[in-house]
Image (cartoon, rainbow, N blue to C red):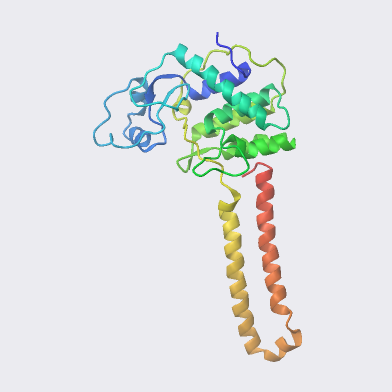
Amino acid sequence: MQTYPINPAGIKLLHDREAFVGHAYPDPYSPLGKALRGAGLWRKYLAAPFAIPASISGLSGAPWTIGWGFTEGVREGDRMTLQEADARLAVELDKIATAVRAACTVPPNENQLAAMVVLAYNIGLGWSGSSKPKGAKDGFRQSSVLKAHNRGDTAAAARAFRLWNKAGGEVSPGLEARRLAESQLYLTPASGPAGAAASPAAPVDDVQTLMPQAVDAERPLTASTINRASVAAGGTAAVATIAETARTVTDIKSSAERLGDWLLPMLLVGIVLLCGYIVWERVKVRREGWS
């Protein structure tokens, strides 16, 4: 039995959600993966690779995947045995577990560690340092899961797993189920030693076989449609207020003169404060791991 750096519960979760496949296959949310699914050929290709129809053979299948969800260095036509996959998994999880521990300013218990390692295995560790390198992708180090964990807010950390549930711009049922299982493991009280041998994998199902490896990062708050809408609405309201106030002042000049010069600035300040409150609420919601 292979020994891993996380507990059996974490390995079982990973096995249950990844499913071992001994040959390279396209990511289910890649252009080629979507085409195979649309043609009803997805399960057939997972069972045994075949010559891809010429009409879709030019589509990208990246990232090509093999074994227990491995993507690095994987090319179409590659093969791997279960023993090779187990050995590679142990090596990769060692690296990820070390990085996850280093990123945690609050030491995780065994279930928290296992859940975060399984998450990072799927979404990547992300970049390190104070500034984002050009072309770098966000990952576990940038996640709201880690931020909430390091604040000691385990409830928010557990909720934040679901912020990583999309691939190719769409919500993935496989990622939804996986994130829920990871968050449940994260919240499970620890009761045993880490690093024990893994239990056997569960049977393969459709949720497993549609497990994307190119996961969309959680949306930054600067890209929030609510935040953008509130700013846009604030600008529109400001313009409308100026126009309406101008018309009103023209129509009832004597009343405007009695009110003085403070009316328009106060209205605009009120609009700006309202928009700021909406953005602050969005930051608060994200901090708590909701959306």
